[in-house]
Image 1 (cartoon, one colour):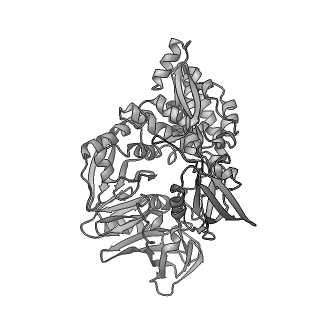
Image 2 (cartoon, one colour; image 1 turned 45 degrees about the horizontal axis):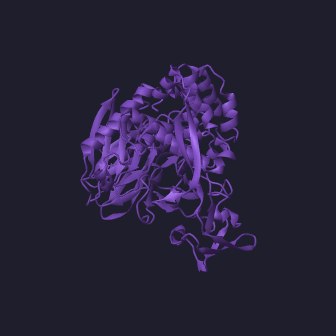
Image 3 (spheres, one colour; image 1 turned 90 degrees about the horizontal axis):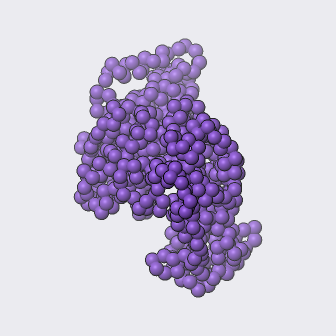
Length: 592
């Protein structure tokens, strides 16, 4: 380890002039078992410049703005000064040579209820740390290799995508982007591993002290099966090893990284079904290729500024949804929708029920999917995941039809992965599809990706001898008419107010004159300040109730809403009576 440290510290010799050079950097992250309110980070760097700037990175999807929780930034180098020059940037002025900086991350108050799986935490038996929630990076030295020392309680084991060294407490990263993209799960962990296509895959589970026992053999087997199917699509991995980081006590959800993933996995749910979160796991794992390797053109490798809007998330997220379902079916794993047809029936029904998809293009919905306040689409809400999944499904049918079943979206994904050095946008995707199918998909992209025309599903299902039958009727939930509660709220951090979001202007709330981003003053005379309070009030409503809503815009506005039911479409996919043998074969190959 001394040899490795000496090598890293020798990468950038001290120079007598103030020209910036790439410094050698070592981090030490320390968790004190007697104080689990946060951790301390020490940075030791060698630089030829007299001024260095350190920044907290912003995640492209979930910018938690952890610069808010940085405390006590100081230098232990004689003659050095540290000044905060921006919300996420600290400037260190020190004589060239070895510079030491230390700071503390003070964890925010714990979330009520279940925690998001990507958010850091500490408990006596373990926690999640590292990544953009822990490590500042040196501006101008983003390509420098770094060394990380972890000083953790003795009983804690470590699981991370960082590169291991001979010393179990030291890890390395090739650059700053890798450092902040590699969260660290540590504690009293359970671990399993397997190999696929020569790459090692590690499954790590952090249980709560009162965790419910579950069938770990079935749990691991399900993951191994869909990993195998993913390799059947791509052929090779963009990593040498991979770590699944599962956390008890976090809700089902996850965040992808280049060679790891953090996922919530409650032991009680796994006890009922070892594959309870397998669809989410497959989704995040597929992102290793379709988002982390096949990257949108707008994505930065690392930045302290918020990620700008991304126009191709309909593909990065939607095609990942498409494959999370498809690959699990290929692996023979039972899913919520018993068949592929049933899955598409549900998706198409939801699509037809939402007027946003006929008003906004896939690219425009993608641009507001992340790092945008709710209400960006006005009185409409839409999912880039759902819209993209259906676009991907229709493209798959077009490719299969044009090639007589010889090719599919699998070939498109392989092609994009092979050219992953080229960043992704709509034109690149369009060209890849056309190169695979030798067909013209420009009209489809003009209509549904760049344009906002609703999808004619029968046109594309007809290519494989199928059609839809759509009926509209009263929405029902648990055998009872469903209440029109197509409104929700969010708490604006800018002015600490509760704002409304109308998800459909044809809802009772939209028809009453309410609009997204109205500031809610009161509901039936009761002042509300949080989404949880509003949700509780909404859930207490019954059909026929009259609701008086007071909001504030430029002028106060009072609305009266009468709670009623609403209609929803039911979709059934049926075979065309004149379907040919060739069309039936295409349908079978698409797992219908």
